[in-house]
Length: 96
Image (tube, rainbow, N blue to C red; front, side):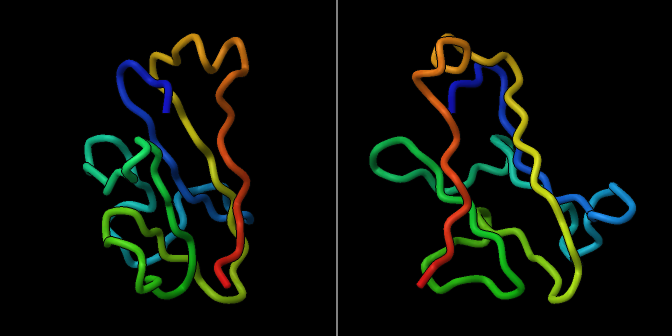
């Protein structure tokens, strides 16, 4: 992710707009958590009520069945690829 300082992905409750109370210490993953990096330098962040087998703990955010949420991606110190739109975050995709 083109962030000179750090990046963060966070889950928020769709009703209260506060951090999703999902039982994890923080409803977010960020650079300082040292999530697993793919060989191409990208990150896969997983969302779901249970951790997928393919996911490391640092790359997974718990969701709650029947509870709405939204995701916010923050880039602190965004780089040129963000501004010239040569980089965009991927869409959320279901795991099959």
